[in-house]
Amino acid sequence: MSTHPDTTNLLQRTDRNGAVYLTMNDPDKMNALSEDMLTVLQAQLDLIAEDPSVRCVVLSGKGKAFCAGHDLKQMRAHPDQAYYQTLFRRCSTMMQSIVSLPVPVIARVHGIAVAAGCQLVSSCDLAIAGRSARFGVSGINVGLFCSTPAVALSRNVSAKRAFDMLVTGDLIDAETAEDWGLISSAVDDAELDDAVVQKVDKILSKSPSAIRFGKSMFHAQRQMSLSEAYELAGNVMADNMMTDDVSEGIDAFLEKRKPTWKQLPE
Picture 1 (cartoon, rainbow, N blue to C red):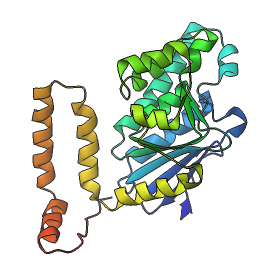
Picture 2 (picture 1 turned 90 degrees about the horizontal axis):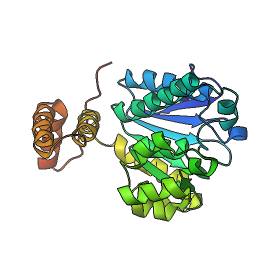
Picture 3 (picture 1 turned 45 degrees about the horizontal axis):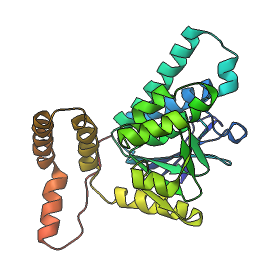
Picture 4 (picture 1 turned 135 degrees about the vertical axis):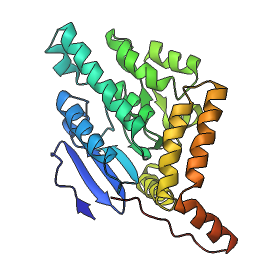
């Protein structure tokens, strides 16, 4: 296990066997997505996107909360529309960077994930939460409709459930979030770390190239018509079939042995 040298204390990075663990470290502000937090998150996502040795990312937060959304005090200190447009554009770019990463991103959620924090969970490919976690898009409670979180939220849960959360600001518990599709699974708080490790290990046991083919295709096809999606999926699957890992995987299956996957080139 090694600590990556390029991180600031605001975002801690640990690399372990192909998995990158990013931990937001601003517990006094409940890991709010301040300007600085957006900067360090974006920097790490950009580094990970170019690193073929990375096979999975886990995003978590220190302290009592996963992420409480934007830094409202910082926002009130800059009452300027151009400032807000830039801030929300930066946040949206960071969220899209998570989606466009070539490897799965898992949110490890505890405490609260509200407003842009809920958007952050929605933007991750997978999310595992402790049962005490709570989720919401609570901007409406201060007179602000959570418009940018609505984009990610409505791509995870049904339109009526998403809109209900957006206009009431009500929090939902982890089991409801699991039932609605906002998170992958809810586990006992004491089992949260083990559940994340198990998911990471499962992903790391699969072909690195297949995972990368799959994530790219999965998100792209969701925005397409049915015929366009099948056209893309067929071409990606044909490309995937030409890799050494598929040859190895099929041979291993036929020979009743465990496959040995090829590492991606540096």
